[in-house]
Image 1 (cartoon, rainbow, N blue to C red):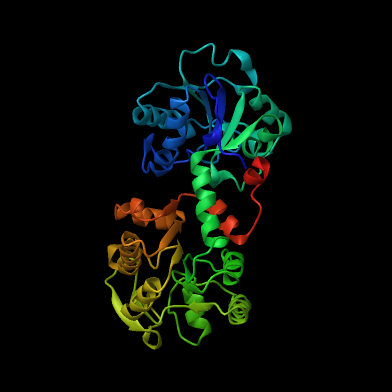
Image 2 (image 1 turned 135 degrees about the vertical axis):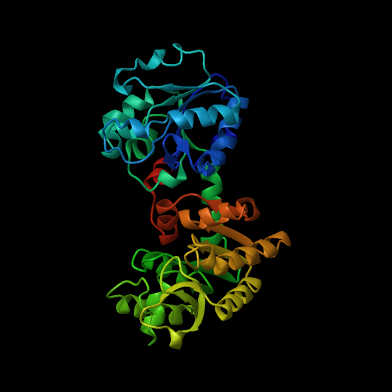
Length: 392
């Protein structure tokens, strides 16, 4: 995989730049600009090198139809403000653009093509559509790691037709994930949450062979609590998971990886209720587990203190209500504290975890924070990502 940062002559070259600008929109207003902020270094690098930039991206799932609410117009304006450069949105049909004239028709250094998913050929991974797109530029750059698990035309097919490189953000994502899966500094700990254990089983199985500790929190921990003979009341849980848990326990013993799940919890009768601490044997039938308890927090922070590398994917509780955010906040604070003194290398991923860190204004206090969801998890599973494979 070749990085665009190492290319010597980009002056006046037309760069076809695939970004993930799939930010949350509400009535044309961007609710979270994290994904935009993260790709600014690549854009600024290309601007400095005097390249001409044509951006490909998407928002939402229009399924091959033009959906006005999913236009890239508000993102175009946000990019313009952040870069201090004019960014022009091209709304005409890509199939009707005369490729050689695209940049000649405008005086702008940066063009952004309208939502690439307005074309059904994108998600169909259409070869002809990719060739058509490739004719728009001289060089292709993928800086959309969070889309790189998709076999889509602008991710997987374009590199067949033109010189192709990775962008700065994609390089950072892959390097950070390699550090916690290949270039490991031990002891290494994974804190993993989420509501369904079945969606994370392959990640856990792959990491058991590499990690020293795997700490299970969030909704999926309820299955462990119940498996070991305790009631979880009205808490979220997944059915038919005993075999999955048995497989995890068997593999963890074989590979000498410790599996840790909550020893105590914080409950309430509903999501807006007041918090009550409970031992596992004390959970009532009408109570919902919404956070980890003080004994569990203490155990997790001690494990963080004894770790050299941390991967965190998934909050410890229902952090949207401050009453149940304490466990997640304490985990964040302990990792930040050890980061400050360079005792630890920390990688954080997953939308909910990133939202939590945004709420705490702490995104920049970790070694690496990934905005990728599916791609992040599939990489941790050990899968080949179509976007990375194409660049290789």
